[in-house]
Length: 373
Ligand SMILES: Nc1nc2c(ncn2[C@@H]2O[C@H](COP(=O)(O)OP(=O)(O)OP(=O)(O)O)[C@@H](O)[C@H]2O)c(=O)[nH]1
Ligand SMILES: [Mg+2]
Image (cartoon, rainbow, N blue to C red; front, side, top):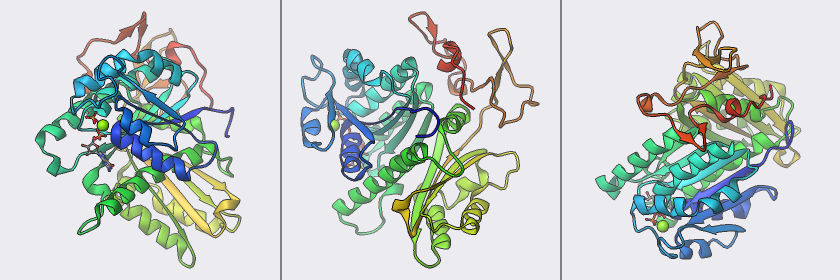
């Protein structure tokens, strides 16, 4: 693993999250760590490929689902906070997959994001959003949960079901396969990038930068290709990825992290072509690229892009243990002491104090942790 070993946990919440992780676990690298949580025992029991299956909400639903009630989902998580604390202890990065719009996942996700923040873990949530046909009430619950999640999560990738499903007359099972693959490609792709040692390394500190500046919302795209014309094919697939918005994420992103993985046959000109086409037009964009060679990718080339939709004006350390807004001279890519302010959406809200700690101040500042560069 790059720099000192970091622990990355991939967690599924609720029905959609658990089933995504169950699929992922069947084809993932051996050393990837997975866990799933639900209050619904039946869902957990059917996910046999995941070792860490955690039932939340004993005494709340007693093994049944939250029945579409987000408040019950929240109570289940609150009631089982000790189990969550134990799972999160020692985790550096938490990658969460959750479907929003129903009960457990929608209610539990913001609680888990808050507890991860307390535990000092970075969080990136891959949220599956409901189809339009699921109706206004379900969409409303998804929006409500997203809003709460933005308060605590470092970053959220939104994956509307209507975009990650094929059009037309696809069979239901094919549609679920397709969305499962999209989610898995994103999560496993990011995990690989952070776990591989590359020629140009992407490491935890780079992800940290993106997560702390990205204003809580990210887009992602990933693709792989092989054979003749593989680079054009790869670039085309990256652009037409259901979440890439026809490549607009590359052109407009104020911050972007991209990783290329290839076999020993990857050439410099191929890597260069990919990079040139991915880097946004915007000169002031914060860009971090990595290239890793993995013998398992012989004949193939893969790329994953995580792009910020907006970039927060940073706060800087004022040198007296406090914060002040950046003057602008610091530059977007300059990290030392530069911090992401809390979401402006909640700008007028009270600060969140927990056990005497102000959670609106990023963990690494509260705990005076020196960031790796
Ligand atoms: N792509 C995809 N989306 C799903 C799947 N299952 C559910 N969803 C979406 O995820 C949303 C939340 O559903 P679930 O994850 O089943 O809900 P839950 O968190 O288990 O909540 P309760 O069952 O009410 O406790 C739904 O509104 C759907 O839009 C799935 O298998 N694939
Ligand atoms: Mg459920």
